[in-house]
Length: 315
Image 1 (spheres, one colour):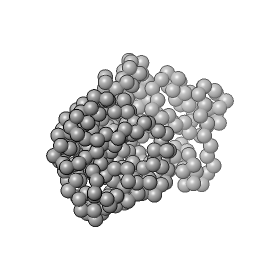
Image 2: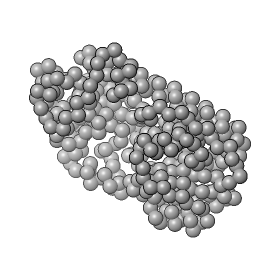
Image 3: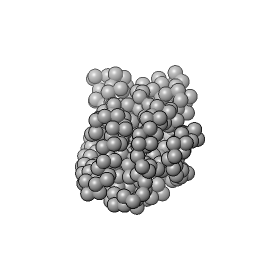
Image 4: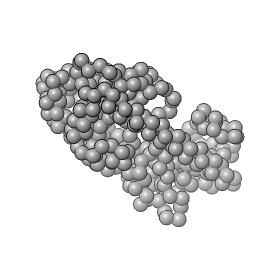
């Protein structure tokens, strides 16, 4: 909100009302819904659309909540027929729908009438401006892999842990640094192969980003993902976090191609990064090139948000 206010020439305020209030709705210029799926959310959208002074509605999704896999704890929440129907209703009837990736737009477009404004892609970007760290120049220690996430990624680890560990065993010294929650058996697979695992607890997002911006966290981020519709729609916000910390990252090519990742499976990408890492200037240039590209993407997507708000307020 603060970011938007700096870029537009009209006053803005935020009303985070949980309960439906006709008097309050009458004061709104725009209704924004983030990941809506409940009857209460739907009731608000209907009220906005039917109000005498119609309130424009903007719905945003950054995950495919219609295809949450069974191993994800969120599956029980979003898999109900009621939740699925509410999400489809939002995709069908909101004035504007935005999503965070082209993959998600492709998956959701079939629920959007061709008579309505097409689904727009506005990519995720980090919400605060922190300076990029530089890649570590130290090559005397281990090659450090980095991962962050929660218990929702257990199946993602299962899909690629053996492949990653086998690659690690071909190198003199590798460490895995984690922030969040990693399945104990996955940690044991790494440790059984002689790979040191440094496991940090989950932290507040601002503390995490501040830590990343200080740099020297690790040398490359890894993003193992199971191949399913939910993951194919994911954004690359993890890659942006890694760039903040002065490192590149790798992920499955079936997912990463939309963000410009190198071709090949994860271990092919890891090997390519590893070879560049051993040449500090080469790796520094690679990371800096990706940071500059990320800045350009951020400017583009900021502009898209401002243009969208401006157009909605003119309805």
